Length: 281
Ligand SMILES: Nc1ncnc2c1ncn2[C@@H]1O[C@H](COP(=O)(O)OP(=O)(O)O)[C@@H](O)[C@H]1O
Ligand SMILES: [Mg+2]
Image (tube, rainbow, N blue to C red; front, side):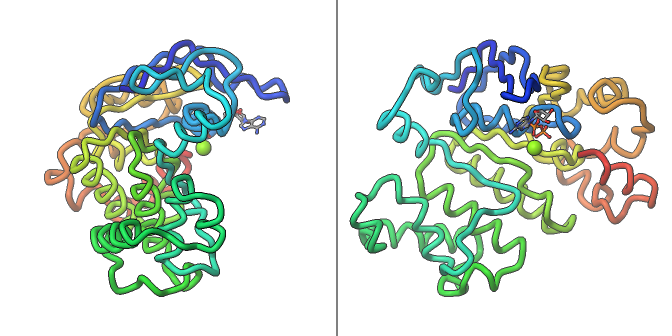
């Protein structure tokens, strides 16, 4: 279980990005963190694995206080938190297989990783994961030859080969077209389900969040202003999170994936709605 207590972040510039956030997440839950640009979504996710150092407050995972760890213990904790990024963060000149195996670097010793000599069990697992994310035919391709969706599949496999206890996902679909976005979100959520793996997914696309997440947390100016079910995201709530807008195209869609299947696709929406959603970052 993940627990955040009074998590606060003030950047050296003076920006107060998180104002005492409290959050508890049970095992296996997929939580979508929504909110406008600058709300603090990336800061929150990065404070959990301390890529960003919180100013005050506590983060604990399965009873271990992450915020008090240092050195080797912090590195060990970090590798238990898989991360997936908007811009994939792959090594362009390495192959798909090598990129996935780089997720094991926290486990194999320095010299083995220096020579990129991984145990056979890691290689077998990489093959299994690549098959699971649909890239078994691309194992030897270089990362820079892949499409955006394929890159993100590599990013997902790399995070999972860490065998994480928590998945932190920052705008996984922001660089992808609507159809690929949906496939990637579905894949992430299915994998979490299969592994009982909790995930926090920062996503500015409200429709996608509603379609796939079990719980939605709305962040605004560093504070939680909504925490509840996808169905509970009403006009009023969205206005509170994003400001005054006509939400008729967003409310009433999502939730059940089957029910929302075609209608929730961005390019199926009338032009003004598409623009409005696109601007909601
Ligand atoms: N490295 C940084 N230095 C200073 N301020 C930052 C930094 N990163 C983010 N911020 C500020 O913190 C606030 C939250 O940013 P961020 O977490 O990136 O929000 P989001 O991911 O929701 O767009 C914003 O006001 C932003 O300008
Ligand atoms: Mg962000």
